[in-house]
Amino acid sequence: MDLLATFAALLGSGGFIADDAAMAPYLLDWRKLYQGKAIGVARPRNTAELAATVKLAGDAGIAMVPQSGNTGLVGGGVPLPGGRSLVISLERMNRVRSIDPANYTITVEAGCILQHVQQAAEAADRLFPLSLTAEGSCRIGGNLSTNAGGIAVLHYGNMRDLVLGLEVVLPDGQVWDGLRALRKDNTGYDLKHLFIGAEGTLGIISAAVLKLFPRPRERVTAFAAAADLPATLALLGRLRAASGDALTSFEYIPRISLALALEYVSGSFDPFETPHDHYLLIELSSSSEGSGLRAIAETALAQAMEDGLLLDATIAESEAQAKKLWFLREAIVEAQRPAGAGIKHDVAVPVASVPDFLSEAIAAVGARLPGVRVLAFGHLGDGNIHFNLCQPREMPAADFLAMTGEFNRLVHDIVARHAGSISAEHGIGQLRREEIRRYKPAVELDLMAKVKAALDPRGLMNPGKVI
Ligand SMILES: Cc1cc2nc3c(=O)[nH]c(=O)nc-3n(C[C@H](O)[C@H](O)[C@H](O)COP(=O)(O)OP(=O)(O)OC[C@H]3O[C@@H](n4cnc5c(N)ncnc54)[C@H](O)[C@@H]3O)c2cc1C
Image (tube, rainbow, N blue to C red; front, side, top):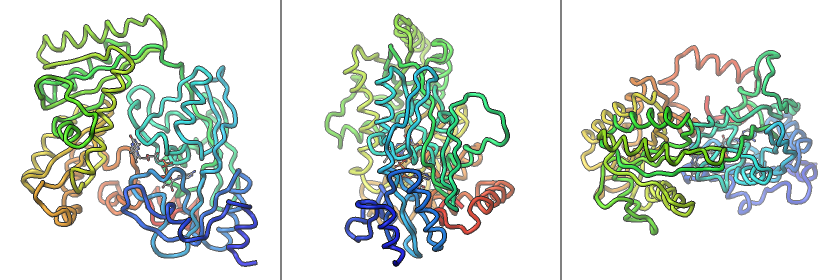
């Protein structure tokens, strides 16, 4: 039997795709930047089938590309255009294996859609807090492998902070059962952290034990206009302190992003009568009813207005109003595409450096290309800014995109001067693979190469990504 027939026999009906048209969606990334090639797409139903697939591919010397929801933004989940690769999709491994409300844990397979995990937690009166715009499509395996962030990192941490145990299929087909539901376990190296954020270069995550939290009973959502960038930081500190650290989201939106949403995304609205330069979308939450959170937020925001930190503020009166405010946060992302060609940077700096980073970077890109539109928005509370550049209105898109390398260097060098990161939450993939060589210490790159060589000596696990 030839290799493709062996995969098909192993994986059963619907388990193996080798037809070009059916493979197409697995070979193109979400941003349509990377088009890959594969000998087939394996869709195992369980860990045993996954392990057998990996063993078979490994023995045949075929590169393996794990893929979950294919919403990644750095080209990590699609194969390279050359060579012989097998895409291994986790989409059929989508069961919630168990939920333990007393232990505040849920055990899920890697192909579970993030939103389904949130819903399963809610049905058990618990919260799984990871939340991002792609939550209806991205899957836990991808969330783990990119160490996803999103809008609640400020309070709950990123994906790495939400994991207690992992089950992983290693590059030689062995299964590591590390599905421990323990909050304390100091029995040697904490190996799960090697696989989290590894973007599929060290093994394939098949299942995970995730942490749950008490479900919020009260939420306060506010939209505010800050006097300037330093004022946003002052408000962040005040709200954290005043609320007993109940601040869950602290998102920054510049006027230019809101203006583009108003121009391109129907349903967008201006929350205040007059335009302001700097907006914040703020959410506080508490698991206890009668928490007094609303009064705390009202007092803190009123005081900030009195002190000149804020120019305007509004607090949602209902769940529906809160949703409308959050819609604006999604609309500013959506407005980027119709606004023109974009060059994106997902960067982090220490929170206290955000105002300086923004002023310096905005000035530098504006000096290089007058008319460039800087859409710098995002998770200010985490120091994570999506520093996206949109082409000047009259400039041909191709001419603008030809400047990608130059703008990357300009922005990332400023990030490095602020001791920041050139990829805060999206990962490295293919997009930033060469660039990290400039910004990571040689010792760190060498350690990464040694870990890779130890776990995947044949270099078959997602080659051409990360390192
Ligand atoms: C509209 C939109 C909004 C987004 N917002 C955010 C955001 O706020 N925060 C954020 O962090 N990200 C965000 N992202 C990026 C993306 O959604 C996340 O990176 C997400 O975690 C990827 O999950 P996925 O299932 O789609 O992974 P995929 O795209 O399938 O894979 C991502 C990487 O993980 C590897 N991988 C996938 N599954 C496995 C596995 N089981 N074992 C080992 N390796 C695996 C792949 O090889 C690839 O390198 C956004 C994306 C979109 C499209």
